[in-house]
Image (cartoon, rainbow, N blue to C red; front, side):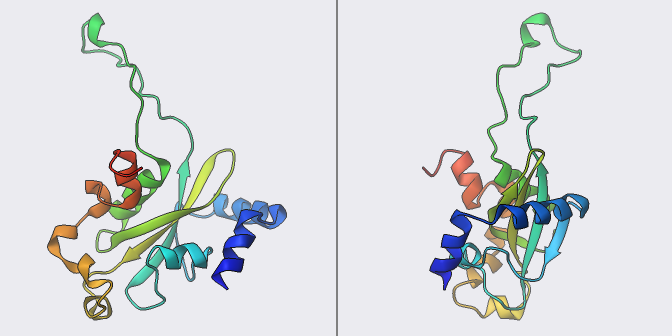
Length: 167
């Protein structure tokens, strides 16, 4: 079944996707989703349909990664900006969701769409305090104190890729 879901996402129905994104643009930046849109991708990244696991759809504006030139407070030699932000949109989305939902930890994320203005990601979040998560042998690693604020500290998969730790 997951093979066919993945195959359908290779060539999505443009009309349906366009209508969805029109709705998503009008909705809030963070939207809790009952079920993941790309079930195959979510399952591959660790999603399970159980208490303590939440999927949040997030909207991130595209563009604007060039750093602005400083307005004042430096000598001329230090006023130049050549560097751009190296963070991926996915990592930015994960960080924003992590800051919004402080009691949850980011497990992973995946892209569900983009238009001319926004990227849309679904971020899989885990509640490490739930007994369902603590007793799950494949998920209990996230309950450890050393995994607090993973997205902000750059320990998620997207963050490691942006930092050059993964090809």
